[in-house]
Length: 341
Image 1: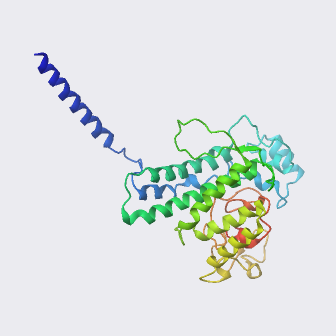
Image 2: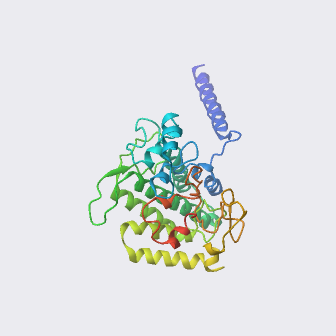
Image 3: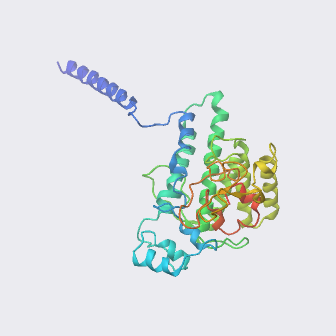
Protein backbone atom coordinates (compact mmCIF):
# COMPACT_ATOMS: atom_id res chain seq x y z
CA UNK A 1 0.00 0.00 0.00
CA UNK A 2 2.73 2.54 0.83
CA UNK A 3 4.34 1.73 -2.52
CA UNK A 4 1.08 2.55 -4.34
CA UNK A 5 0.83 5.86 -2.46
CA UNK A 6 4.40 6.69 -3.45
CA UNK A 7 3.68 5.96 -7.13
CA UNK A 8 0.47 8.00 -6.99
CA UNK A 9 2.37 10.95 -5.44
CA UNK A 10 4.99 10.88 -8.22
CA UNK A 11 2.29 10.74 -10.91
CA UNK A 12 0.38 13.63 -9.31
CA UNK A 13 3.52 15.75 -9.10
CA UNK A 14 4.28 15.07 -12.75
CA UNK A 15 0.76 16.06 -13.81
CA UNK A 16 0.97 19.24 -11.71
CA UNK A 17 4.30 20.24 -13.23
CA UNK A 18 2.99 19.55 -16.71
CA UNK A 19 -0.09 21.70 -16.06
CA UNK A 20 2.11 24.46 -14.61
CA UNK A 21 4.36 24.47 -17.67
CA UNK A 22 1.34 24.67 -19.98
CA UNK A 23 0.01 27.58 -17.94
CA UNK A 24 3.33 29.40 -18.20
CA UNK A 25 3.36 28.83 -21.95
CA UNK A 26 0.12 30.78 -22.36
CA UNK A 27 0.84 34.36 -23.47
CA UNK A 28 -1.45 36.99 -21.92
CA UNK A 29 -3.69 38.78 -24.38
CA UNK A 30 -2.64 42.29 -25.32
CA UNK A 31 0.88 41.80 -23.99
CA UNK A 32 4.07 41.38 -25.99
CA UNK A 33 6.54 38.92 -24.53
CA UNK A 34 9.56 39.15 -26.85
CA UNK A 35 10.76 35.77 -27.96
CA UNK A 36 12.39 36.48 -31.32
CA UNK A 37 14.31 39.25 -33.05
CA UNK A 38 11.21 40.77 -34.67
CA UNK A 39 9.59 41.19 -31.24
CA UNK A 40 12.56 43.16 -29.93
CA UNK A 41 12.62 45.19 -33.12
CA UNK A 42 9.06 46.34 -32.40
CA UNK A 43 10.19 47.77 -29.06
CA UNK A 44 12.20 50.38 -30.95
CA UNK A 45 8.90 51.84 -32.17
CA UNK A 46 7.46 52.30 -28.68
CA UNK A 47 6.56 55.94 -28.02
CA UNK A 48 8.49 55.73 -24.75
CA UNK A 49 11.72 55.97 -26.73
CA UNK A 50 10.88 59.42 -28.10
CA UNK A 51 7.86 61.05 -26.49
CA UNK A 52 9.26 62.74 -23.39
CA UNK A 53 12.98 63.09 -24.04
CA UNK A 54 13.94 66.34 -22.25
CA UNK A 55 10.29 67.41 -22.02
CA UNK A 56 8.15 68.07 -18.97
CA UNK A 57 4.60 66.81 -18.37
CA UNK A 58 3.10 69.68 -20.38
CA UNK A 59 5.24 69.29 -23.48
CA UNK A 60 7.68 72.10 -22.71
CA UNK A 61 11.39 72.03 -22.05
CA UNK A 62 13.26 73.88 -19.35
CA UNK A 63 16.41 73.53 -21.48
CA UNK A 64 14.99 75.80 -24.15
CA UNK A 65 14.73 78.61 -21.59
CA UNK A 66 18.45 78.52 -20.83
CA UNK A 67 19.43 79.86 -24.23
CA UNK A 68 19.05 83.22 -25.96
CA UNK A 69 16.44 82.18 -28.51
CA UNK A 70 13.41 83.48 -26.59
CA UNK A 71 12.34 86.35 -24.42
CA UNK A 72 9.82 86.45 -21.56
CA UNK A 73 8.34 89.74 -20.38
CA UNK A 74 8.48 90.63 -16.72
CA UNK A 75 4.69 90.43 -16.61
CA UNK A 76 4.59 86.87 -17.90
CA UNK A 77 7.23 85.87 -15.40
CA UNK A 78 5.55 87.45 -12.37
CA UNK A 79 1.94 86.63 -13.25
CA UNK A 80 1.80 83.55 -15.45
CA UNK A 81 4.55 81.72 -13.61
CA UNK A 82 5.09 83.00 -10.06
CA UNK A 83 1.68 84.41 -9.07
CA UNK A 84 -0.25 81.50 -10.54
CA UNK A 85 2.15 78.91 -9.19
CA UNK A 86 2.72 77.49 -12.67
CA UNK A 87 3.25 73.69 -12.59
CA UNK A 88 6.33 74.14 -14.76
CA UNK A 89 7.83 77.09 -12.98
CA UNK A 90 11.23 75.51 -13.57
CA UNK A 91 11.06 77.02 -17.07
CA UNK A 92 10.93 80.52 -15.57
CA UNK A 93 13.67 79.66 -13.09
CA UNK A 94 15.82 78.46 -15.98
CA UNK A 95 15.14 81.69 -17.91
CA UNK A 96 16.27 83.76 -14.91
CA UNK A 97 19.09 81.32 -13.99
CA UNK A 98 17.59 80.82 -10.56
CA UNK A 99 18.98 77.61 -9.04
CA UNK A 100 17.88 75.04 -8.21
CA UNK A 101 15.59 75.03 -11.22
CA UNK A 102 13.58 72.16 -9.81
CA UNK A 103 12.77 70.67 -6.44
CA UNK A 104 15.35 67.88 -6.00
CA UNK A 105 12.93 66.00 -3.75
CA UNK A 106 10.30 65.49 -6.44
CA UNK A 107 10.17 63.42 -9.60
CA UNK A 108 12.25 64.71 -12.51
CA UNK A 109 10.53 64.20 -15.85
CA UNK A 110 13.81 64.28 -17.77
CA UNK A 111 14.85 61.19 -15.80
CA UNK A 112 11.66 59.26 -15.10
CA UNK A 113 9.66 59.94 -18.26
CA UNK A 114 12.53 60.65 -20.62
CA UNK A 115 16.02 59.21 -20.58
CA UNK A 116 15.57 56.24 -18.27
CA UNK A 117 12.21 55.20 -19.67
CA UNK A 118 13.78 55.12 -23.12
CA UNK A 119 16.88 53.35 -21.79
CA UNK A 120 14.69 50.61 -20.32
CA UNK A 121 13.57 49.69 -23.83
CA UNK A 122 17.09 49.79 -25.22
CA UNK A 123 18.44 47.68 -22.37
CA UNK A 124 15.71 45.08 -22.84
CA UNK A 125 16.45 44.90 -26.55
CA UNK A 126 20.21 44.53 -26.07
CA UNK A 127 19.99 41.97 -23.27
CA UNK A 128 17.00 40.19 -24.78
CA UNK A 129 18.52 39.54 -28.18
CA UNK A 130 21.75 38.47 -26.51
CA UNK A 131 19.82 35.96 -24.40
CA UNK A 132 17.97 34.31 -27.29
CA UNK A 133 18.92 30.64 -27.38
CA UNK A 134 18.88 30.46 -31.13
CA UNK A 135 18.69 33.02 -33.92
CA UNK A 136 17.91 31.76 -37.38
CA UNK A 137 20.73 32.15 -39.88
CA UNK A 138 18.58 34.42 -42.01
CA UNK A 139 17.93 36.64 -38.96
CA UNK A 140 21.58 37.11 -37.93
CA UNK A 141 22.03 40.33 -39.90
CA UNK A 142 18.59 41.53 -38.84
CA UNK A 143 19.53 41.05 -35.19
CA UNK A 144 22.72 43.06 -35.62
CA UNK A 145 20.86 46.02 -37.15
CA UNK A 146 18.33 46.04 -34.30
CA UNK A 147 21.14 45.91 -31.73
CA UNK A 148 22.95 48.71 -33.54
CA UNK A 149 19.94 51.00 -33.35
CA UNK A 150 19.48 50.29 -29.64
CA UNK A 151 23.18 50.86 -28.85
CA UNK A 152 23.30 54.13 -30.82
CA UNK A 153 20.20 55.55 -29.16
CA UNK A 154 21.28 54.50 -25.66
CA UNK A 155 24.80 55.87 -25.99
CA UNK A 156 23.75 59.19 -27.48
CA UNK A 157 20.91 59.66 -25.00
CA UNK A 158 23.14 59.07 -21.98
CA UNK A 159 25.78 61.37 -23.50
CA UNK A 160 23.25 64.22 -23.79
CA UNK A 161 21.84 63.52 -20.31
CA UNK A 162 25.36 63.75 -18.91
CA UNK A 163 25.91 67.12 -20.62
CA UNK A 164 22.80 68.51 -18.95
CA UNK A 165 23.49 67.28 -15.41
CA UNK A 166 27.27 67.40 -15.35
CA UNK A 167 29.90 70.13 -15.60
CA UNK A 168 31.71 70.96 -18.82
CA UNK A 169 33.83 68.05 -19.99
CA UNK A 170 37.53 68.95 -20.05
CA UNK A 171 39.79 66.64 -22.06
CA UNK A 172 43.08 65.85 -20.37
CA UNK A 173 41.64 66.19 -16.84
CA UNK A 174 40.22 63.42 -14.63
CA UNK A 175 36.58 64.46 -15.23
CA UNK A 176 35.84 62.64 -12.00
CA UNK A 177 32.58 64.37 -11.09
CA UNK A 178 29.83 61.79 -10.65
CA UNK A 179 26.89 62.73 -12.81
CA UNK A 180 24.37 60.04 -13.85
CA UNK A 181 23.97 56.25 -13.54
CA UNK A 182 24.78 54.50 -16.82
CA UNK A 183 22.16 51.78 -16.48
CA UNK A 184 22.51 48.81 -18.82
CA UNK A 185 20.75 46.07 -16.86
CA UNK A 186 17.02 45.73 -17.65
CA UNK A 187 16.35 43.79 -14.43
CA UNK A 188 14.28 46.01 -12.15
CA UNK A 189 15.26 43.88 -9.15
CA UNK A 190 18.99 44.30 -9.71
CA UNK A 191 20.89 46.50 -7.23
CA UNK A 192 21.03 50.14 -8.25
CA UNK A 193 24.34 51.05 -9.85
CA UNK A 194 26.40 53.95 -8.55
CA UNK A 195 26.62 57.26 -10.35
CA UNK A 196 29.17 57.14 -13.14
CA UNK A 197 31.85 59.76 -13.42
CA UNK A 198 31.78 62.10 -16.36
CA UNK A 199 34.77 60.28 -17.84
CA UNK A 200 33.01 56.93 -17.49
CA UNK A 201 29.85 58.22 -19.19
CA UNK A 202 31.86 59.53 -22.13
CA UNK A 203 33.73 56.22 -22.44
CA UNK A 204 30.59 54.07 -22.21
CA UNK A 205 28.57 56.30 -24.55
CA UNK A 206 31.36 56.28 -27.11
CA UNK A 207 31.51 52.49 -26.80
CA UNK A 208 27.78 52.18 -27.50
CA UNK A 209 27.92 54.47 -30.54
CA UNK A 210 31.05 52.85 -31.97
CA UNK A 211 29.53 49.43 -31.49
CA UNK A 212 26.48 50.57 -33.45
CA UNK A 213 28.36 52.00 -36.41
CA UNK A 214 29.31 48.81 -38.36
CA UNK A 215 25.78 47.37 -38.36
CA UNK A 216 23.65 50.52 -38.44
CA UNK A 217 21.26 50.24 -41.41
CA UNK A 218 21.63 52.54 -44.39
CA UNK A 219 17.97 53.52 -44.04
CA UNK A 220 15.30 53.13 -41.36
CA UNK A 221 11.52 53.26 -41.49
CA UNK A 222 11.24 56.32 -39.20
CA UNK A 223 13.67 58.95 -37.87
CA UNK A 224 13.33 57.77 -34.26
CA UNK A 225 15.65 54.97 -35.39
CA UNK A 226 19.25 55.90 -36.11
CA UNK A 227 20.57 54.97 -39.53
CA UNK A 228 24.29 54.86 -40.36
CA UNK A 229 24.41 58.53 -41.33
CA UNK A 230 22.81 59.53 -38.03
CA UNK A 231 25.32 57.47 -36.02
CA UNK A 232 28.19 59.13 -37.88
CA UNK A 233 26.67 62.55 -37.12
CA UNK A 234 26.29 61.54 -33.46
CA UNK A 235 29.99 60.71 -33.26
CA UNK A 236 30.91 63.98 -34.98
CA UNK A 237 28.88 65.90 -32.39
CA UNK A 238 30.29 63.78 -29.54
CA UNK A 239 33.86 64.65 -30.49
CA UNK A 240 33.13 68.37 -30.41
CA UNK A 241 33.22 67.85 -26.64
CA UNK A 242 36.26 65.58 -26.56
CA UNK A 243 37.92 68.28 -28.73
CA UNK A 244 39.23 65.66 -31.10
CA UNK A 245 38.54 67.82 -34.09
CA UNK A 246 40.13 65.41 -36.54
CA UNK A 247 37.44 62.93 -35.49
CA UNK A 248 34.78 65.63 -35.81
CA UNK A 249 35.83 66.28 -39.39
CA UNK A 250 36.14 62.55 -40.14
CA UNK A 251 32.67 61.57 -38.99
CA UNK A 252 31.04 64.77 -40.24
CA UNK A 253 32.44 64.16 -43.71
CA UNK A 254 31.24 60.55 -43.65
CA UNK A 255 27.78 61.68 -42.55
CA UNK A 256 27.61 64.45 -45.12
CA UNK A 257 28.76 62.19 -47.94
CA UNK A 258 26.27 59.49 -47.00
CA UNK A 259 23.35 61.87 -46.47
CA UNK A 260 23.85 63.70 -49.77
CA UNK A 261 24.77 60.69 -51.91
CA UNK A 262 21.30 60.49 -53.44
CA UNK A 263 19.80 63.92 -53.89
CA UNK A 264 22.64 66.27 -52.98
CA UNK A 265 22.55 68.94 -50.22
CA UNK A 266 18.87 69.64 -50.87
CA UNK A 267 18.06 66.24 -49.40
CA UNK A 268 19.55 67.26 -46.04
CA UNK A 269 19.30 71.03 -45.71
CA UNK A 270 16.71 73.67 -46.54
CA UNK A 271 17.66 76.78 -48.49
CA UNK A 272 16.33 79.50 -46.20
CA UNK A 273 16.44 81.97 -49.07
CA UNK A 274 13.57 80.05 -50.65
CA UNK A 275 11.31 80.19 -47.58
CA UNK A 276 8.12 82.25 -47.79
CA UNK A 277 5.09 83.19 -45.67
CA UNK A 278 1.85 81.27 -46.13
CA UNK A 279 0.04 84.57 -45.59
CA UNK A 280 2.33 87.48 -46.55
CA UNK A 281 -0.35 89.99 -45.63
CA UNK A 282 -0.35 88.93 -41.97
CA UNK A 283 3.07 87.58 -41.04
CA UNK A 284 2.26 87.57 -37.30
CA UNK A 285 -0.19 84.70 -37.70
CA UNK A 286 1.46 83.24 -40.78
CA UNK A 287 3.50 80.05 -40.87
CA UNK A 288 6.67 79.48 -42.85
CA UNK A 289 6.43 77.68 -46.15
CA UNK A 290 9.46 75.68 -47.28
CA UNK A 291 10.34 74.06 -50.60
CA UNK A 292 8.37 71.00 -49.55
CA UNK A 293 5.50 70.31 -47.16
CA UNK A 294 7.62 68.62 -44.48
CA UNK A 295 9.23 71.55 -42.62
CA UNK A 296 7.14 70.89 -39.49
CA UNK A 297 6.77 67.16 -40.06
CA UNK A 298 8.48 64.45 -38.11
CA UNK A 299 10.41 63.46 -41.22
CA UNK A 300 11.60 66.94 -42.18
CA UNK A 301 14.71 66.79 -44.35
CA UNK A 302 16.83 68.24 -41.52
CA UNK A 303 15.90 65.49 -39.08
CA UNK A 304 17.71 62.18 -38.96
CA UNK A 305 16.89 61.44 -35.32
CA UNK A 306 13.44 62.58 -34.22
CA UNK A 307 12.33 63.42 -30.70
CA UNK A 308 9.08 65.09 -29.65
CA UNK A 309 9.14 68.87 -29.89
CA UNK A 310 9.05 71.53 -27.23
CA UNK A 311 5.55 73.02 -27.42
CA UNK A 312 6.26 76.07 -25.28
CA UNK A 313 7.71 79.49 -26.14
CA UNK A 314 10.91 79.06 -28.09
CA UNK A 315 9.68 75.67 -29.21
CA UNK A 316 10.21 74.05 -32.60
CA UNK A 317 12.97 71.90 -31.10
CA UNK A 318 11.57 69.07 -33.18
CA UNK A 319 14.23 66.60 -32.20
CA UNK A 320 16.75 65.94 -29.46
CA UNK A 321 17.21 69.56 -28.31
CA UNK A 322 20.83 70.01 -29.31
CA UNK A 323 20.18 73.66 -30.11
CA UNK A 324 20.22 74.50 -26.44
CA UNK A 325 23.30 72.43 -25.67
CA UNK A 326 26.81 73.88 -26.10
CA UNK A 327 28.44 73.38 -29.45
CA UNK A 328 25.47 72.85 -31.73
CA UNK A 329 25.97 76.16 -33.46
CA UNK A 330 29.50 75.15 -34.41
CA UNK A 331 28.42 73.56 -37.65
CA UNK A 332 24.89 73.51 -38.99
CA UNK A 333 25.90 70.57 -41.14
CA UNK A 334 26.41 68.30 -38.11
CA UNK A 335 23.36 69.47 -36.18
CA UNK A 336 21.15 69.59 -39.24
CA UNK A 337 21.55 65.85 -39.41
CA UNK A 338 20.24 65.48 -35.88
CA UNK A 339 17.74 68.25 -35.23
CA UNK A 340 15.48 70.76 -36.93
CA UNK A 341 16.35 74.45 -36.92
